[in-house]
Length: 150
Image (cartoon, rainbow, N blue to C red; front, side, top):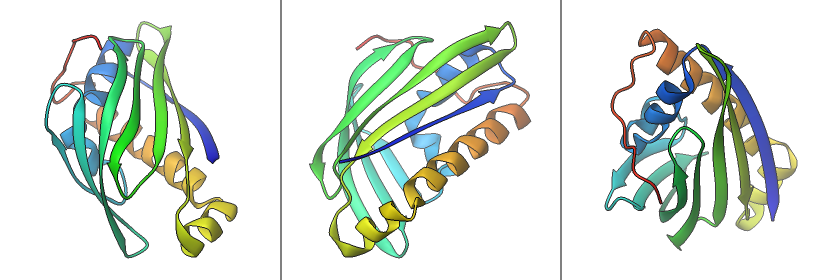
């Protein structure tokens, strides 16, 4: 099992950053390699990814969701094995630190080599930078929100 921990500061209030992160179907707009996400229930999402020419499909279950604090998940079915959590930390009224912690199990030779070369860490860094750009260029207006607890 491999691990990645990355963070970024975004120039939006914690509620805005959290609310945007709950809009899973918008992830392809800022996550490189994510082709599609379908929100099937309040706690189940279906992912289609293509990274390095390899397409994977899997289901992920939200295991914990606390508004303005955290979203945790684990894969439950499909071609990827991972679990993670994103936490939201208020820095001041208009700034938030977003922290991603991801545990994943690389599959096959190509993924293991990519893991050793730091591909997943670079991917996470890039995705967080694109999230920052996505929410900040929207003027701090999220595309939606889900305020339920899991």
